[in-house]
Image 1 (cartoon, helix red, strand yellow):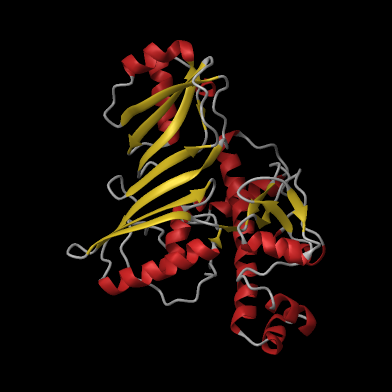
Image 2: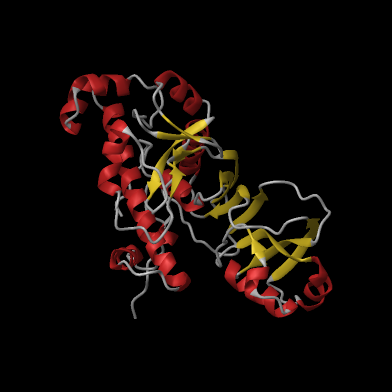
Length: 365
């Protein structure tokens, strides 16, 4: 996928590798645990292990079914991660006794009335070590990341969503158009990759529109986009980079109710102070579409044949927080720390800085 970057700085060189020594993630729960109830909540640190593998290990240690083990979100294998897992309280002794692998460490335990469910997550804290960062590159990264914290970033799905060859969405499209009921988690994952691909294409187009308006005089932008001049003049008056259109599906940020944009003054103010954000379509059978002008922009990336999934709306623009940089000039290592809301990819944050794809090259033997 050809991604359109939002910021206009020159590309910045650095070396990135997602490994357990250089990539750290910590879940931030949606709410505090009451420490009362029938469910044991484990705060677990793991390395070189996917969430699905973690659940398998816990199931083996407790003789529980996978469905009885709760988790909020998936965490990558090639990272050191901290996440929360729930199991019925009566299995506490079994899990403490039998969870002996060195790749897993129980940091804390709590209790709760209800098990953890997928999506019950506020966001994630990231700490990532970049190599080969020159002093000049460090200064550039510091400048652009401060702007990104202040003004936000596009909420693309990361390359991880689309498989090793970046083409899993093609299989997903074929499955979605077959009209058959999805069989198993793999088919669901492939169709969701197609769903995510359509969203990313839409977001890239919206960013391209915003860049065109920001970089050109209204008269020139109107010709490039083939938009009425009066519309471009209205859009150009918006102070923020990502331009809003009448009918955009706005949602209270970082979570809350949706509403259609019909009052520019209210929507622009809330967007600029990080209290709301426009959303993009994740196509499915039970999801509402944008209206008016925004619907016109959404239509090329809609697909009425994708009804195997329910669908949803996803924030198009998000606001990273808690930025910290720690630079070691001798080794040219830069540790960058930041927070992103749930569903956002740290790699898209880094790609916006560097302006190049971080997807590892697949070796062909």
